Length: 170
Length: 419
Image (cartoon, rainbow over all chains, first blue to last red; front, side, top):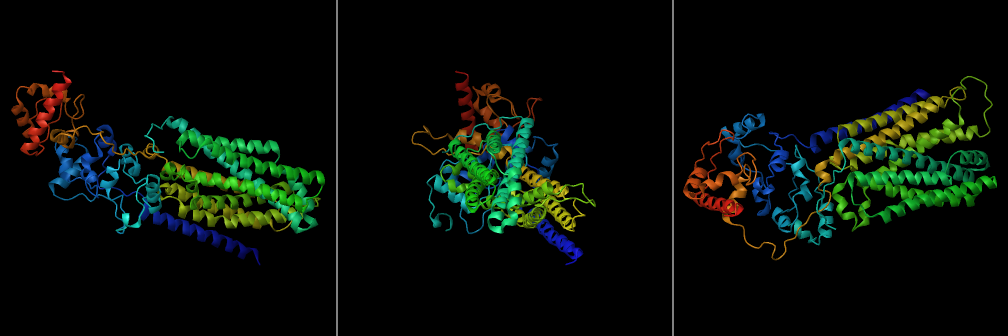
């Protein structure tokens, strides 16, 4: 076989894998990496420096399946007067004035066939950081756990929580 | 098993970077060296035993120059121990215990010692028999098994959510990403050994000159080229498998770029092999070894980048599982309504003992001790009193909430001042 054909075959072979790697990179960029939020809310200040409890803003975590995001009214209770010159706070105030909800990018989302309740996990004594990481150290919120079934089941087994299918797949 | 979160960031960022470089460096040395020993031993023993007499001198030659001896075995185990210790110091994953890792290191040493023994037997006997080959195979399998555990542990380092559970379930050490890592190691070992053999047997400065090539030249050259080519051609598959099975948080543009660079390097090495297969006149193959080592290094750097993406402070601080189950009698009294209002609405800006956004409450609330109505009025319609502080916003509390929190504030500041 002439060498030039072998060379072309080699370049084609590795080129194909380069293309596949590029495709994976594009997929990651579009679907998997931490999305940008409409307002750069820093947990480092609110949960870190101000030491606000998680439930100060995520009020329903201990009493509902969903933890929720606070309404703009909650933010404005301080930011009517606090840090009004901050460009991110200005964005917040604009949303408040125009009565337009903030389209936060959801980071922790489970598929519809999974029933997860925050209330039960908090009542069992689990710290928020077990699943969300040390949020007060995150200038930019990111998901730090896979939230995959295998991980959930591993923790349930270790802590003697129910592992019956109907527990989570109602 | 559940432990409270302890401060884990023990090192300054500079020391942590140095330790991480040491971890990556020892990983590089360990994997290249052991890969070379493993595949070198496989080739040196199995080719003569099953490929025929013509490989005997090549096999013996290879054995005398590579594979393990006891000092090398000790050195390799030391490097592995340093790598494990760096990982422990940096990340404190709490993965199993010293006895387990000591056992894995001992297994590694045992395998290398068996290889050293079979090498000594073959060299002193002057030939490689199938008995030698069997003994060597046991050594190779033992070393491979311990390497598999070490590579799986390396993969586990980028899955910190599993760390709290591994102690109760050793099976969690296994992961598809670990398998991918081991396959990457295997293909790179083939490539390193092949190009190493080529570099050892073909001097680089003999282009065009009349060289008396040694008897073992042709089988060595062919074996080296075949090994290197197989290793390099296989490489893209486990690489892609690695990218697919890596936790998504470990991925970043730098990981993808390094993967692309490694593919380009593999392609360059293959093209160099092709160029050097044209006969005696094209003998410059030392560069193939350099490119393959660079490829190995890029692979280690990609691991290092993945660790940097995952093992950030918010993750390391939450590396243990904190569960505080409610016990009877822990809550002596139900929280008062006033305390609830305070925690929900006031703690954003106020503490009792220090300035946050607003003034310390211990300083301002006692003024209202004789006049709770004035305090309630202020909470209902706050006015700016002190130029040193921003204006307090109107909170929109109900009358019940205002009354409850005012009573709570007076009670807290009264008890603090001991009055």
